[in-house]
Image 1 (tube, rainbow, N blue to C red):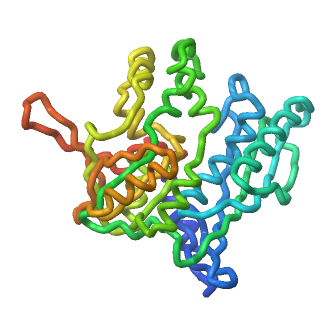
Image 2 (image 1 turned 90 degrees about the vertical axis):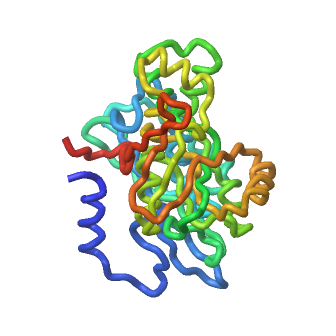
Image 3 (image 1 turned 120 degrees about the horizontal axis):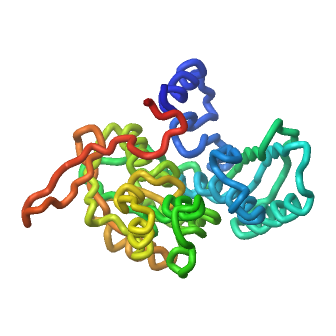
Length: 335
């Protein structure tokens, strides 16, 4: 049983809705009707020591920032603004108060940066290790919310930033290679301190450009598969168009990893992936300039189900097609 199977069981057993629940399980956030045409966006994520982070190399202040950022990214993925944070913090009996102080500084700094406040939560003792569960409540006009379900055949697929940095950074942190030069350090920082695309998401929603959107947390292969599944479509992704940094390829050589695997299967990029009409290219270029973000066209939405990677082959006009549907990270992979 994989992660999707578990979610399906929970969803089927709890399928009753309410008129004020505009969107429930299956998107980046739940969307709840508010007053005056506004909506509330609600998301929650859990970070577990030795699953999502390792305290041997993750500084407490950056862990605090990351706990906020990965949830704020879900708000950004629907075009909203984060407003309120709730934190459930599990700590072992013997914990370092200085560590906790630095962790709290990271939480505070991230909240200031993204315009939200820590409004409450819970503290508990864990049997071992640190456990962080964060809920973020955001808001935006209900008629501007961007869901995963709006992709149309013929849409172009866009991604922000570059791919695979966090996955490579994690491998470097785990001892797979040197972190000496600036390029390698940038990969490590992408893992330790991700930057959600709040401004970009907001602009795409306000300008009604994105037909469907989500953030990249489990890798492009899996997250695009989720988007396509919600929209009832498929996708062709062009390997040659995927954006990456030179440092990623240097790290891949050092780590003996396939850079393409890091880009499509590696998680925690927290970039935005969205689809838009082919005629929207000039508007998207303007939004990219306004947000100060690089955007890349990486593929096309198609009628056929599934996500295919189009990879150039040996011959000048040859190419091979690889099914990469749900090939990214899964907490419960099937053996």
